[in-house]
Every structure is written in structure tokens, then in C-alpha cells.
Amino acid sequence: PIKSSAASDVYKRQKMVTVLDGVAAGGGIAIAPVYRLGESRFTVKAKYTDNVNHEVSRLHDSFSLARRELTDLRRQAHQKMGEKAATVIDAQLAIAKDQSFEGEITDAIQRYSTTAAWTAAQRIDHYLNVFKRQSGGADYYHSRGLALQDFKKRLLAHLLDEELPDLAKLDHRAIIVAHQLTPTDIIRLNPHLVAGIVTDLGGRTAHFLVMSKEMRFPTVVDTKTVTEHADDDMVAIIDGTHGRVILQPTPQQIDQYQRLASRESARLRELGVLKHQDTVSADGHHFEVAANVALPRESDELATSGAEGVGLFRSEFLFLHQDTLPDEETQFQAYRKLLLAANNHRVVVRTLDIGGDKQLAQVPLERENNPFLGLRGLRVSLAYPGLFRTQLRALLRATAYGQLAIMFPMVATVDEFQQAQRMVDQEKNRLTQEGIPVGKEYEVGAMVEIPAAVAMADQLAQYADFFSIGTNDLIQYLFAVDRGNGQVASLYQSLHPAVLRAVKQTIDCAHAEGKWVGLCGEMATIPTAVPLLAAMGLDEFSVPLSQVLPVRSQIRRLKVRQLQPLIHQALAAHSPAEVRALVDQLTSHMK
Ligand code: PEP
Ligand code: MG
Image 1 (cartoon, rainbow, N blue to C red):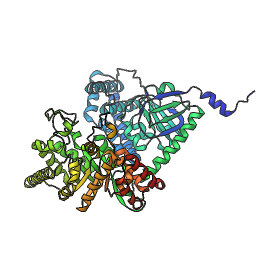
Image 2: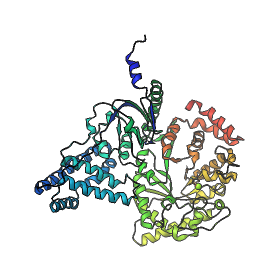
Image 3: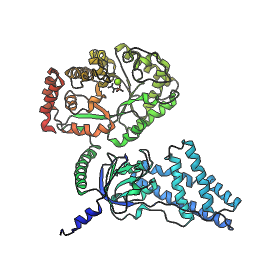
Image 4: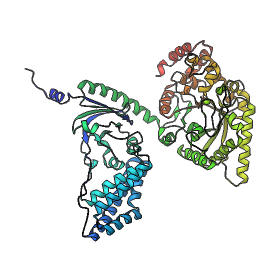
């Protein structure tokens, strides 16, 4: 007979593997026992009271206890996670401090002789319904509603002398499993004991995620049923990168994920360290790695991303998805916010780039047979000067708040660039006459994404303060291929010597005039292109936020001097395949 060992006992208990898929909320992989956070479902039994004064004083005591606790939680959040996380508590604290809300419950107790707990629950439920209706019933995570729900639990716990489930009681390292978590839950827990978090509810915007992301816990939300399947002490694997939860995994699964986890954490450790370091190649050449930003969420992440500023802010996103054009003040506020988030680094704002595939409902452009060869980018701004001047005024006003660079998209000729530049000067003079401050140090540059601009780059560089090469468009115009068209997509070749020659010429022309050059197309993230661009002397790589650290990590391993011969050879190559082989050969020892 086979003797039962401890290991096979464990295996027997772990036979029922359950795999759940949810929404990946980041943080990598965790393997640990489960800790289930209980649900607080308070039942309010007594509706009426014959001691109204007692109920009123209980209500005031409970409000003041809640205020004290929340103030304390806010302080803890600030210490543990910083100010951004702490502000998440503010919504609840505001409710606890709302005299008129407390007064409203007091009045109802006095008028109807109802208990404090019953009355408070009633009034809070009333507002929860209002919030739910306001958000169309869909957004359960409406922030005010969530804060009120969390506050309701706290207040009722005091009124009913019950205990709130408290993650501070966790005394061993575990994966927290809960129906839903609140920001206050997260603050209470000891971060060293949390291996990861899984919840039934929640989308990527769930409020507690602001905090769990700060703490970098592996997190999977929206599994719908994890609390039905998971039990205390059951082993679980969670993969916060792919949104997967495995309950009672097999030893093979544990093994597999352990290997993945150690590889992942080595990579993250290496990248995390780079956040606070300059981008310097192994042989001492400096570069900048900036971010491409479009969505508001991305500007929020800027400060913690490690990016050295913004190399491309696609301002058209301020204009999309709304009924009216954002006025000067709205735009000004958005640019100012971005500059403040950039922490003294440069922010390159591209003026409105619509036309082609990007249409704005508020600016109805004529139907064109060839929209990509039609009224696009700067051409739209010059055709609608009112629209353009409003944006320029907002930008110029924002120059007082940081290092702003204004960039025009789709510049084809020197003349167009100068026309736009004159409008900048005119608006600046107008603002100055109006007594509105404009910073002295802003730059005005051009995107180089039309072959004519490459051909004239030497002249353009005399007027522009900088260039940013938009390879996404440049490649499509160089080869005359629409990359969305499957029949010709194979001709869209980022590493083709034709592209490299255009990029090299642009960089050289800018440098000849003492100007800097960035590249903000996808090409800046291609591992085979990065060594070539660095060797050509590109000053700034502007890439999606998630690529900032990987690109910086690659640059730090390069020996730029040793790559010099590569440029000639690559420009003389006949095909992307040849270019790839050359780069591989020369960089194999720099990996
Ligand atoms: C580009 O064309 O390379 C670019 C960065 O701009 P967009 O992708 O917004 O056209
Ligand atoms: Mg473009």
C-alpha cells in the first residue's frame, strides 16, 4: 500500500481545480492561501423608539466616531500610499462632516420617533437610489454612491454596536477574496501580508483599485463568483496581468506559475529601478524617453510612469466624444493640468490633428475622395482660424505653468509652418496686450510625417524649434500604402532603408541648425529600431506609457559608439530583413 504522505494529502485536498477569469487589474502573479473578507450585512430590527433624545445623541456620537476614524484612515492612507490615495477617503469624510445630512436624519428621528439606525439606513438608501438613477443604474461604482455605501456600513456598525469586518485582523500572508472592497478596507490591511486581491465585483475603474495599484498588489476583479468558490486557507494562484484565478491548483500549475512569477518579478524589479534614473547608454550618451498621452487616465499616470515628460499629447482627444468644442478656458485647464503632472519636464502638445480617419462632429468637413490626402492636421487649423486661435490662446496661457512645446501636425511646407507660427506670435501679442501672462520659454515645432517635409527638412529646421518624426504617417506616405489595407500592408515596412534614410536626413538637418529631434511614432518602440535611432543621434523617444521603461532599459544596454558603423550599413541595405540581420549582429553582446 502507498503510504499517505503530507504532500499527497495536500494534493488530495487540492484536486478540485477551479479556474475563473476576471478583469486583469495588474500587479503580476501571486500564489498564497485565501483569506475571505466577511460581508457586513447589518439588520436593523427596531424601527420605533420611546427615547428620541437617546437616539439623537447616539446618532451624533456615531457621526463623530466615524469622523474621527475616517480622519485617522486618511492620515494612514497618506502615510502608506501618498496623497493621491488619501484623497479617495475625502468623499466619505465629506459625508461624515455634512452637517445638513446629519441634521436631516436628526429631524426625521424627532418627527417620527424612529431609531437612529433605522432612520439613518432609510435616508442613506434613499440617496443611494438617487445616485443609482443618476448614473443610469449601470455604474454601480459611481464614486459618490460607493463612498456613501461604505459610510453606511461604518455608521450602522456604531449605531448597532457591531464590528466591521477588518482587514487589520489578517495575521498571515494571504490572497484577499471579497465580494467587493472599499478604499477603507485597503488602508486597514498590512501591505506586507497581502499577496493579492480578488473580488466578485468591479471593473477597471473600481475605486479601491486606485489604491491597490499604488501598492502594486496582483489584483483580479469582476470574477463574478470567486466568493462562492473560495474558502479560507485554500491555495490560490492569481495572475493580475491576464485576469486569471486558479483555486486549488495542481502542483504542476503551482510550479509553472512560480517560474513565471520569478521571471516577471526580476523584470519588474529591473524596470522599477529605472524609473528614477536618467536614460544614459552604457557608454554615456544621454537620451530622453517621453510619453505619448491622449486619454485623461494617461495624464494621471504620467507622474508615476518614469516618463521624462510628454513627447506627444494628442490634443484632439479633448475634442472627441463631446457635443461642443472645448472653449479656451477648458483647454487651458487641461494643458495646465498636464504641465503640472509632468513635473518640470517638457510637454509637447500637438495642435488639433483631425481629418483623415479622425472626424469631429463639431467641425463638419466636406466629404473627400482621399481623406488621407485631403484636409488634415494643420491644414484644418489654417482653414478654421477661429478654432486654431482658441487653441493657441489656451496653450500660450498654459506656458506660464511649465515647459510647454507647441507642435503642428502634418506640416508639408515651410510656408504653412510659418503661417501657423505667425498666428502663434499674433495671439501671444494679443494676450500680452490683454495683460495675460505668457511664459517666455516655450518652443514651437513641427511634426515631420509628410515626405515633402523630410525633403525640405534643412529649411524647415531654420524656423522650427524642434522636430518630432511621426513615422506612423510618414511610412504610409513614403510607400503610398494604407496600412489598414490588407492587400498592400506588407509594403508598410518600418525598418526599410527608405524609412531609415528619411529619419536620418531629418535628424541631421535638425542638428545642423542646433535643434532637437524626437520620434513619436510606433517605430520608437520597435526593439530593432531603437539601436539604429540611438546611433543616428535621435534626442527623444516618445512612446506609449507602458513602453517607457522597456525602451529606457534597452537604451541603457547600448554602446552607441560601437553602433556607428551600423548606420552606413543599414542605409545601404536593400531590405528590412538585411537591416534586422545587421542590428542583431551588432547588438548581440548588448542584450
Ligand atoms: C504619427 O503619425 O506617427 C503620429 C505619431 O501621429 P498619429 O499616430 O496620431 O497620426
Ligand atoms: Mg500622424
